[in-house]
Image (cartoon, rainbow, N blue to C red; front, side, top):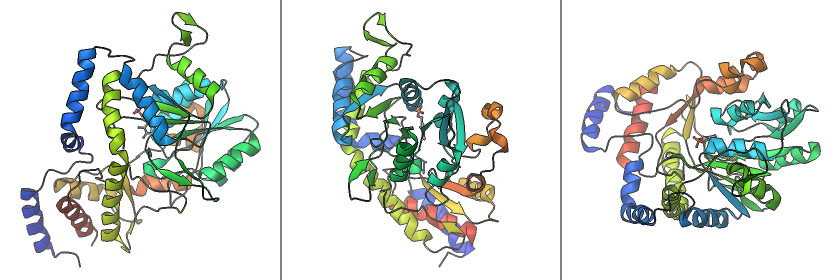
Length: 394
Ligand SMILES: *Cc1c(COP(=O)(O)O)cnc(C)c1O
């Protein structure tokens, strides 16, 4: 039973008084739980003064590789660089077509255009929000060279089907795992793999709000392939293997020692962080279950969900801007990820993508809303958010 307007208004006033302010992500409260360890690790780097390429960078890379069960982890400066370096290492040439969802963060698609490759935007599945295999098949041409699935919001893309298509057409698969680190994918034979480790290359971001977030920028690239790993490493380091001997054109993309030292500590907490997010999602699911105007996030049988975002779909006719304002007036942030899909971004105008017909993507763009989710959510905050959403809809 939703609260009556009088009850709701009283509930809001009393809740706001006792609660910690609600944030989309509460990195400070999370820091406080590991503060002494983090502070010491940062001080150790300061004392060593090996700010670039220090011991924590190598140690973190090895620990992350062990966690992911992948042979090679190449650290870099951010998730966007990771994607760019991945595409450079695969030797893609200008005009080569790269199939990618339109419904994703701009970094995924921007680097394709930056490298003078052609982004080919395809549909996502309306339930999982991830790239739709049928739409991939329909988009393949003789110029297609790669597929970039995105494990959006923390749910795995349907990798088994994607890898099958890639094998049939001899395409590269670059996984954008920026939102799903730690997520398990299960193949139909029962085998389990971490997202980001199934394609030729996986990319991730350690942007502070990500599930494994640094206290600044950071990123990493994963691969099983030793030759490819060496090339990725070279490209991230000015195309050199040996200092001042530059074999190929690269860039400068490094994870610094302070971030690596912090990430080593946070990697040990990652499974716990993801479980905390799942617990928040469970609570939201329970509160919104069966509501005729809300669709809660789908969890496919092949994917765990690490809930980088908790994203609802609103039924047609609900005033989403009104809901955002209603929540904001009550101290509850919410976000639209993403308000404009890739194929409608002016930056891609020269590819003629605005005329594409992507009805699922357009519909999702108009109906999604993401609620606060992080590792430090309190029971009382959750209750306040769910009551507020339900009060608006009734
Ligand atoms: C965050 C993110 C990136 C880029 O990461 P940065 O570290 O901000 O460059 C790429 N793809 C997706 C899906 C992301 O969410």
